[in-house]
Length: 308
Image 1 (cartoon, rainbow, N blue to C red):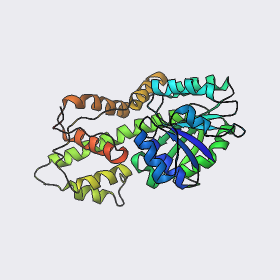
Image 2: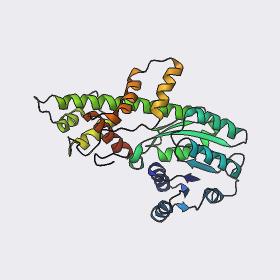
Image 3: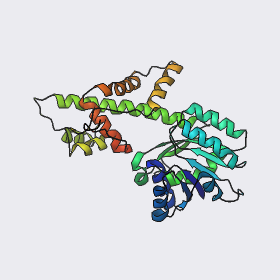
Image 4: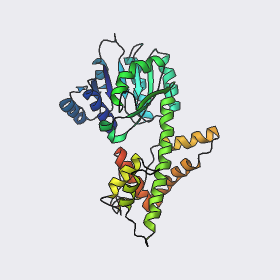
């Protein structure tokens, strides 16, 4: 198979590499020429100089042309889809693998359907470790589009049988990922607060590296987040160079708004989001832990105490 990947950042670049290593041809474009050239030279990606050039290199249109977007949510994705549509033909497919709002995905899917263009919203989890371990893919699409995309999803997932699923119609993929991220907020917050309490019990002088490593084996709270935390605490338990500032990417906010719209109580998820808002003015140890965990699984920016 063959597809175009637009956006070759941390996620898009690694996904491109995983696809290429699985034998799927990828035409890649990014605003950074260096990134494009590096993937072309090291991994055999077909380099494109623009989005129209990428589409032109997908073939003559006899087979469905697939364009996968890994762009920031909001205007960048919206503008790119609007620009892409006239370049494509009936039966072609656009995939949004970024963190778009599911309502935007529903609207975009309907707009593209009027033009005969298929659409798939793909909630993508796995962070910077996805290249090595595979990505968890939550797909919203029509059955026909999902079937066409199946070989690509299998190549990106941890295995043929696990880590990917067609979860429902257009919008369902990004909705599922949104709730996933809301849960993630709550899990991270609980872990950070618990470790903060352990650290605060000075009379026991607990070794947090030892405790988190202990919990990784057989405990109820064992998880990948705990694995990342235990690994980081082995070398630095004080986190003196990490500022107690935790950003939020937007999906936590959307999850809380969804709980309000549905009238479903979600106090843990809501408080976890509020804690991130408060972190800009706080100096607590738990916020340093949250920032460290985000960097561990997603390569997200860690603000230093020396940053202005």
